[in-house]
Image (cartoon, rainbow, N blue to C red; front, side):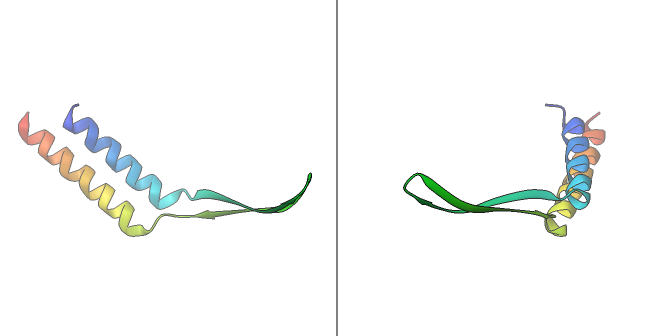
Length: 70
């Protein structure tokens, strides 16, 4: 795989992880016989900023390393 392509992908993923929240769904239910009573909760949480920063830094590093090899 081309290291420059990997760098671009990492930068894009890093920026997206800082902006787009990830949906999480939880199911709280009780089944008694044939009846099921439950509640589904949905929340959206962003990844910690450190994850996005590490992805962006890794992508920039890969881009720099890829441009040096050429």
